[in-house]
Image 1: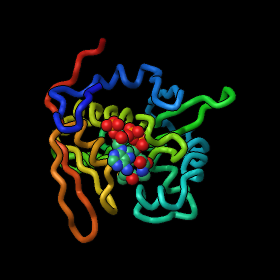
Image 2: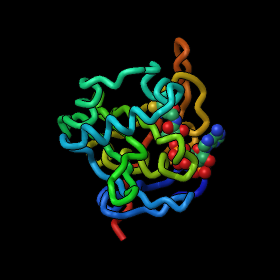
Image 3: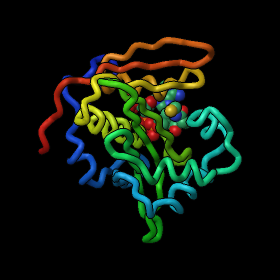
Length: 191
Ligand SMILES: CC(C)(COP(=O)(O)OP(=O)(O)OC[C@H]1O[C@@H](n2cnc3c(N)ncnc32)[C@H](O)[C@@H]1OP(=O)(O)O)[C@@H](O)C(=O)NCCC(=O)NCCS
């Protein structure tokens, strides 16, 4: 991993390696990254329902008291040429549990939009960093040169995460903060 937010990396991690590995993050957690699939509806629902109204608000721009079927569908059925969803999962008593969810949507040539949220009990342990690296490298492989994120307010953790991916510009429009990151051209070879 790259260690300084002030110096963008010259290459992104290999997506295959990130998705094939179990990652030891902080807090003694071991997480796996994988693409979500149609059978994940219950896991995604349990994850979203555990989030506080504040976390839902930051992610969805709404406190979203009810997790709708439409929303679950967006996270579990998608056209992988236009949109990808990556879950960070752990095993609790032998059962898989989602602790972070990130998605990327291709908006136009070269531009993709990222959004993510991590379980509040697991924040600050590097899961956001793993998810953004995986999403960025998948988006890069599909042709994105720039990654955008829209935030409701200043969000220091998101700014750090985007700066770790590449040179990041921050603008403000109608109460929304927009981060635009230029992705490195290269992907690191798998180890
Ligand atoms: C943004 C979010 C996904 C980060 O997830 P996370 O798992 O806590 O992220 P990480 O543990 O990988 O930490 C990210 C970096 O931000 C830094 N950071 C975290 N909180 C911070 C804060 N309040 N101020 C400054 N830096 C902060 C961390 O130190 C870390 O940097 P480092 O790698 O140099 O140590 C998480 O806070 C979240 O789910 N927020 C609610 C939803 C949201 O805001 N989504 C963004 C809109 S789409």
